[in-house]
Image (tube, rainbow, N blue to C red; front, side):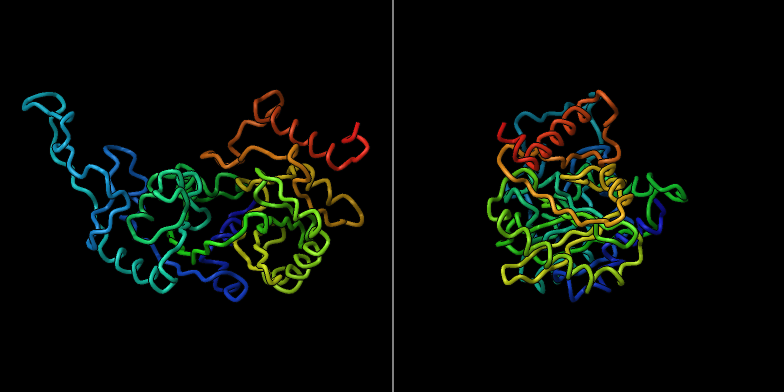
Length: 335
């Protein structure tokens, strides 16, 4: 894995080239003061002061001294100087304008990642945001974004930096009617599309069984016409969404291996496919309720997980792979 392969997967790098094939996105260059705010894990959790009086958590306590249980005696060890919440007026106004131009609701992501692990803290339990402070809440609460901020190049054999020189915030138009079963991850190695699988592996979608042949041709065609000659890396993954009218929209690029989840594949299986002479494209879906997998969306990047022989993750993944093989073998599955 090289730094240039990681860098090509940053949304501010690939989106301008693939704008017509993707969903509408507005990208903001983040000031370093805001990056410092996201990384600051000392002291209390403070949301920025909104110059528009927008509050991501309207029922929260703004002044701890107003709480009956919060009492600090003068001269005590706990006495400290008041802490001021940060304020980013220019960035807030820019983001407000972008949200309005994108229809009033967006979902945010940094250079590589979205704050999926912090959706629980949002009042909507999703990444849907309508204000700057809602975006700040999700970003500040996310542990997985630390990979973008501090560890993006850890898997590179030519690592020369711990983080990119600049960070960007991508605001993507929110579509409330997107169906998770129509989102797929595609695996490309040496410029060849060798694997496709559904991204939402925690559910079984019967409709995918009948549509699998048509989806395979549709995604292969999209790769050939839109991606294959336009993305410069040799090996990578890309995520797509198939719209009801059978159009394909590009959602994201991710590096090959490293912190990218292989989902229904393993990286070892994908590497082995390259040794096959015909390089047949394999499309994997969850084919029954027995094949459902628990979510692998953790705060720890995939390449940080302990998958060594005998570890908890090793046992879990082996059991899941065995079930997937049983599904693929009707005789064994019916035994």
